[in-house]
Length: 116
Image 1 (cartoon, rainbow, N blue to C red):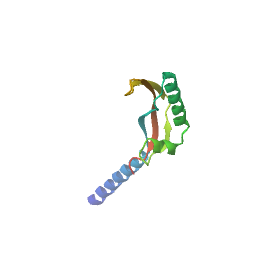
Image 2 (tube, rainbow, N blue to C red; image 1 turned 30 degrees about the vertical axis):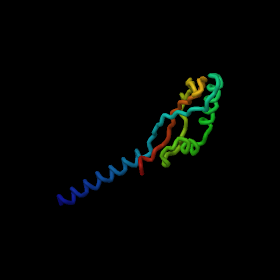
Image 3 (tube, rainbow, N blue to C red; image 1 turned 90 degrees about the vertical axis):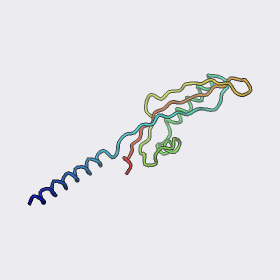
Image 4 (cartoon, one colour; image 1 turned 135 degrees about the vertical axis):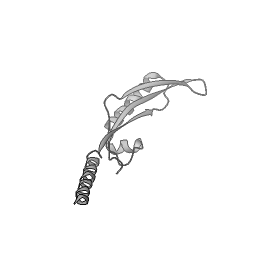
């Protein structure tokens, strides 16, 4: 009788653990990403390139974002979060000329299946 009761309790605990694991299997994950545009001769052009790239990211499908940023192939519903922005960096090329790059800063959200 005592063995049966212990077995029943162990079975119930095991079932609850499995159910709770499945309930939290699909959780939101976030990934901060940057995209650097091609060299530009002015800051204004670099900002325009960055803004264009940001608009492309925001319009991209979940699948396109998944591949562009090499996310886990089990990720679902990939999206660019609000708050993405563009900065510009300045550097000197090997010939002594300054060049500018747009830098897109974006946080991606996606559903992760918890590794199943």
